[in-house]
Length: 573
Image 1 (cartoon, rainbow, N blue to C red):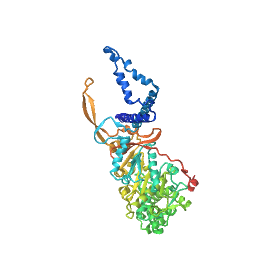
Image 2: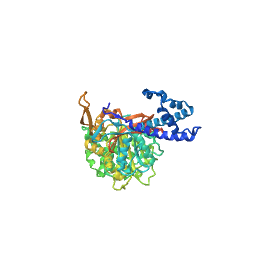
Image 3: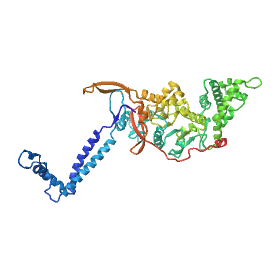
Image 4: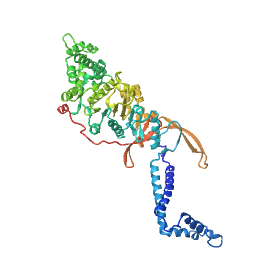
């Protein structure tokens, strides 16, 4: 448990109760006087005061000094008033309304009182909670401008401006911490705006429950998936290299020569197709091309002036040597894993096809939402096609021909980012995303997975591009230590320690501690039930002081099947 206590002060509740009680007393007096006056018009407040005080407490109750303490005599008039039903009933109504109103005001004020730490921070940032946390976030957001009517709500009562929205959001949390529920809440707002969006469906729930009718599904394993017209988007040697990088899995350090060689040959094959067919080629053409004999493939690469032709060595009899065969086997295995399913999906669904170029066009009539569905049964295929599409989209947006925009125009909502593999163009796009009208919302369970994919320096660059960081529940891990040490940092607090048990004097001390204690991320954050509602309690960094806020646990009802086997998947089964 955390050592620094967070408590609510009862002062606001008591002040609210007192203020409301006074107001209700005055209001009730006039209401009773107006609607239920006494039958005798001589009964007034002045008459009541005179009989109770002047003729009661101040009356003469007998000789001797002890008559002052004869309370039975002095309270006789007051008891007479209280025994009189017309007065007694009005008094009960008067005080009853006052007590009820004061109690309700105290309860309401207590619920809306922000908890505070019991220690005082004298240097550095400190966490803010509840309404104070939201007010701190609003103050930081206000520096960036004025929110638009449809701007994204980061949390209840906290609406981002277009500038703040374009600064990108990173969500970190363990499994079951509620990060997907938070992302669904943001995605629902973005989908309602009708803007272009790419959503990574890592668990299958997005496709099944997305609150929209028109969806462009990229999932070769699903019968409803669209066919990506790759020939129209990959039109040069650089694009060919990016496709090869995604479709051929990287091997270990000892086997990297074979995977890198296979990537080079596949890149050359794509260049040969580009030279021969221009943009009129697809997955089936690529699959057929890579399964040419080494001799035929070498001739095609030589005709395309591809440098990878030197990797295919043929003797005088037209037979490839052992090194070439090893490279070709590596390429063929990769093609059977990734290209063949794409070719089969293309053959079974020729009507629904798209290109990224068309989708990004202002005149496009394609669905504005692309869902990239991951399937754990086909992890290499899902990662390859989804990661490739994201990088191709990012590459198109990075082109100088893409116009600049002032407001977010395209949202990349990528849950479980490591599942997409290493994205080469995505970090580059984040550098200029604001000018291109692109905003990103990314989630991951463990930042160490990002470090493994992107290495230290590239991961640090990627991390820096997300100004707003939302942390849900985190157990013991290196990621938690990273959040505590890097995101939150350190602060100096003031404490007072008694010199001894016998003396009341205290000595002031200054101690340096973590802004957020590590255990707090596990003990206090995550999914909670508050006032009967399911919420996600999260910690927001990047907008002033760290703020602990509660957002609704967004759930979508099921609208369609989460998965429908593609024809090639049924045949394989």
